[in-house]
Length: 518
Image (tube, rainbow, N blue to C red; front, side, top):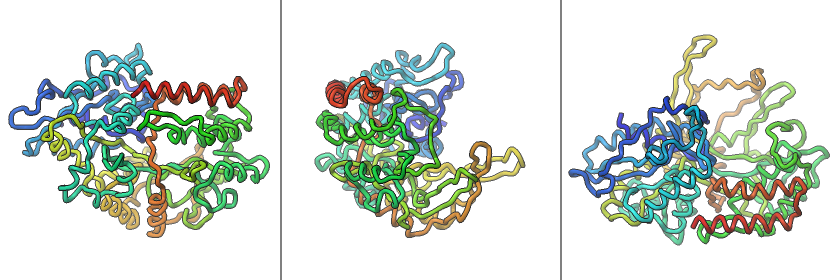
């Protein structure tokens, strides 16, 4: 396997994956194979394309500084190996900033264990990446994690630093605005131009029982508060009655609604933000700290945060913690409502990219841009997106020694229309049903009652709901910005400042921070 493939694979996952914190540097097999040829348009007869990545050991660096194992490790390894082995006149090389001499020790503790980049380390790396994008020709293909902090990618994208991908799609019979989800493409447009394409997408929303929240999909803040005031005594919000937990899942999860990366302005002085802060403040505070414990699964609940990552979300699963049994119902039967986040404009739910987005740098030669598209388009073909949805694994049951099959599923909907339909048919046809699913809670195996099979109507319901969402948000707000907000908000919950002060401070501090990023 080529070294470049291993590095590229480590860069693919942004939103999802299995945690891999604490990886020893000595255990890492990821290396870089970039060379001085990356600074030239051609090496021999090949056009050389450089992809900039920042990754930590054999995992990917998320915006929160943690390491996650790449979901696309296997399919991307095969794709890059195949592409580089073909006689297509193009070769992919990697500029891995994490392997550069000045950055290679970043994120490691005194024992050689990688624990994630500090804020200062992320700033240092991203300054170099930005300089390379602005002043040099070191990078041709740019992705969400070309930066240590992927929020910086969003700023570059929204300020027009990348080529319009619609131009390359015009003459592409296989990957274009008809074969890809037009709704998703349109939500990602900026002034009619498409600077990036997500590999897949998810929907983020709040869900509640219809008996409590009604049947209207989106709601205003006043409607949200009215529903809460009618809840039975002892009810919870997102399984809790603590201010910090309610804030994290109802308001902080919607933070991007108050950030405009295009104009580099913040809107935390919006009445919506103030009113929701005041709602959260009515709950008792845990001294400004979100506890991991204290979750209440038994009392009536207004809403909970949910992420629609696949058609399986059309079947709702509920656990009765008195006997650890599970019951199922269909989302389309009306017992629950996807209400979105409470906002005055009624656009509460939002879609966001999963596993990253990819772009082509605008200030490189047209020849290299076209070559870059020749590679990038492979990520969005029907075959790649269908085959990448589920990775099959065979494992041995440690108790019985029996071999069983399970799948690791992509957490998101493919942007390719045909691939999405293929996956739906595979799910309906039981292609993935031989996966063994054994779940336990506190050592007790969970029993199931009336497990439901997915139906075409469930597929249609999810597709229709996603098409109804006309808000696209970048999900990974910079962690520095999160901390600025939380520093003020948690002090407010603790009683150290009033709501007017916290709104003024958040708006001023966040606004200054965002303007500095531009």
